[in-house]
Length: 230
Image 1 (cartoon, one colour):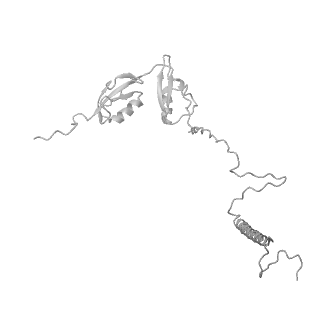
Image 2 (cartoon, rainbow, N blue to C red):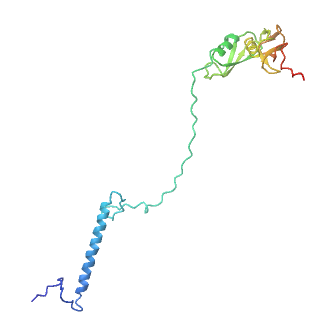
Image 3 (cartoon, rainbow, N blue to C red):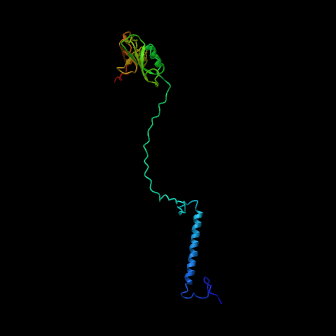
């Protein structure tokens, strides 16, 4: 004999009374247990993989602001990259400057520039004297090897005697002319020896004058082998 508080007991040997709703309760309980098992399994997978999975946004709690996921955040405006500004590397100083040539004899000034491996250009004036009145670039200016310095001389170009260069190697003759303050010209090229010159040797010229050097084979030496006799 039983009392009336038997709801939820199993009756394996008899069927549920019609309309009692017991079958629905048992089925509902079974479904609830199954759902709990699935949720538990899913929760275990999430916990096991929390090191690899990115955490999603959590539900908002009182007093705590929920963090929006990257997909929920408003799109930021495109960032415009400013064009790179090209900077010019500063020129490395060689420590070489125009020497103190102002006030010195122009020939001494030329030799000093040549010793420093600088070029020179003589500009003669209409006054008197051989001293250098100014230089361009000015004295003390930083320069590099090979820079040409203009020397402005007080007086006119002095006279100079043209050396005898016939028979000399063409390159050696050019060096001799520069040493004397003259400059070579090459109407026939600069290969071989000097066969003629103009002005002639011992002529009077002035600094910066040009001397034409005719270069080629030595006098009496054939320039090329004669063709064979048939």
